[in-house]
Length: 253
Image (cartoon, one colour):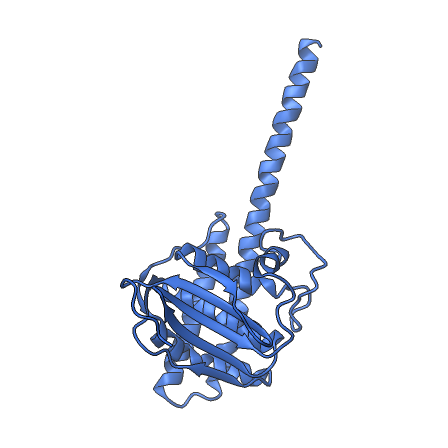
């Protein structure tokens, strides 16, 4: 092989590697922008619906939380230009209080889809180290998926078990069409240009339902937790689990 031919092969290899790197970076950028766009839709819709029923401080606090979600999504959208998401600010979060606060924003959304929503008060202490707005994003996505794609009633329950805080979202629909991890991958978060997923939002053509699960799973993982399917006699049960911030309190029945 001549020196010129060898040089050509080296140049071709370098160009191929650069193209692959640029493509991977573009795929990540598109996924991040899609995530941020997804997060704008949910809280802004909930805030708009909630404004029609604003009557007390509880609803005002719920709307404030939803608008903070929207502001964070805008920060994510801006950060996506650099191939990243906005920063997170972990603090001690009382999960029971967060669920109570978010409930008033979830109820109008549930009514808009004709779903009955029941949120069980979390008994006992349930502190986690987390960004409260990110945690509200994750829980809000699980509830939105249940009311939009499951069936009424939708039940949300917080529990503390063996040093872990769990937020369980049940619905009475047909159940999950596959393992949570597969739904996350097929959502397009890892493959933004993938098509043909059988699980799509009814109200936004082409937007995979699994994207909301993927966002919730990413938030859980970044806070040392996980997202998984829970046991359910009928319908779907999705569980967001985080480690307790204050040791291992006794289990709450």
